[in-house]
Image (tube, rainbow, N blue to C red):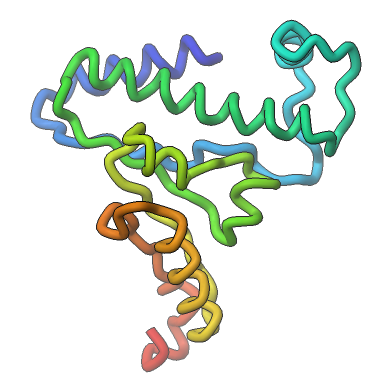
Length: 166
């Protein structure tokens, strides 16, 4: 699967020479229920890389490994895009809340920004409550070294009937 995704990114970047950026949306585990990641390939890779014989849902080792896999996949996709077009801008979408990103989606998007893996991040702050929205934005910005590298997704679709809030 990873190889196919890398090939797709390469094909897109090669086919569209005017493309100046790539946004990796949904670069995460989908949801915490049902539990994902139990393919034969994943289990074997986990065992090989950790030396742990049995996967235990919720264990720190399993969660850390899944988080590392998301980051590793993103890195492979970016490497392919930049192999073809070295100066292409790369971004990814990060989940909110930060706890959800880290423990359910297995994203460590602050490290992606802070390490320079991505040029910027777009966090999905889809709270319709203005105070909660502001708190989420403050948390997102506090997680990165350069706040200019954080874009905030707004919940416009949730505010259709209350445009004054938007």
